Length: 384
Image 1 (spheres, rainbow, N blue to C red):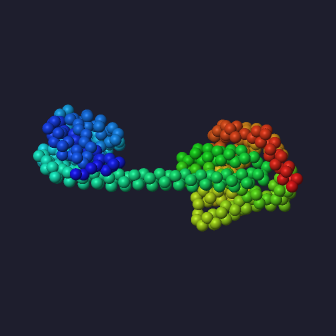
Image 2 (image 1 turned 90 degrees about the horizontal axis):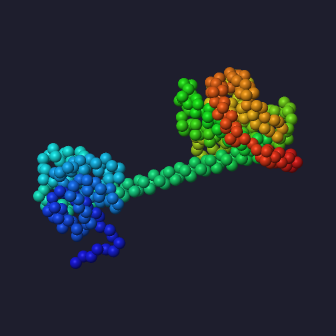
Image 3 (image 1 turned 30 degrees about the horizontal axis):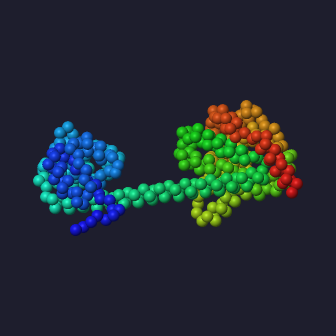
């Protein structure tokens, strides 16, 4: 005599048939090795199939009143909650066309009545083994997908932390506050989203590119960490010699990011965008900018977007050495730079978005406490 192994749950078979004798026969045949559920119609079968724990296999009669087996199978396969339960038709309909129709609806097998008990038991065992294997593969796939998603989130978090750390380092030595970083991030994103359907930019401004742009924007002034304090923190106008040194923050920033990329040993998309912005955000549309004197389309799009964002924020923001310019005056200054300092189409987009820019500036405005802390920080650096 064999005894059930403690803790091992028998597979569940749902038998669907409108004839009580057939249900009794199948229950007696299966109950030794399986848990057996019985349904005398299609509606009852659908309810049992959807309940937890779900059956591992359904033996389904075709010829039933109200709802035949074909319809039951169709509904099972149309429902994401039940579509993976294997269905075996158990019926007196033996025509090839009937079998073909059942298999096309998603059944895995077709057993004709009168049944042969050994044949039924073998086929049930085979299909349960196949389902167990399919469940294992599906669970493994779900696990791997979850792991990939987790690792992806971790990588993105590391990117964000790295950018924040680098940008914060630059901000500790700059006259700008940390809110400048946040504002320019959002300005650039707003411009990119506005222009994503523009014929000149649509092929570049994809969702992924805009995301990389948003991530990279905080690094636009990372090169300022390499500028001497006597120049970087000077409250007055720079001499021509000092300004030449200040200009090098663009190449210093690009080189620092490039060095990090080399150390990593592989190109990284968001770092490529960051290099463009760091190097070229001081270029001008007419070629009079620095460090390379690029003009027009030769200036990377990321840098052209940042140019508008950076200048607007510099104008409307308080600094420890200057007061802010009113929003309307800042807009007018940027409009004057259309086709000279700035890409004309980006300038037009900025004008249309000016109220959004005003809202972003208000959202991330520098408080009096933040300005006081920045002044104290600068005094400490200058004193050092």
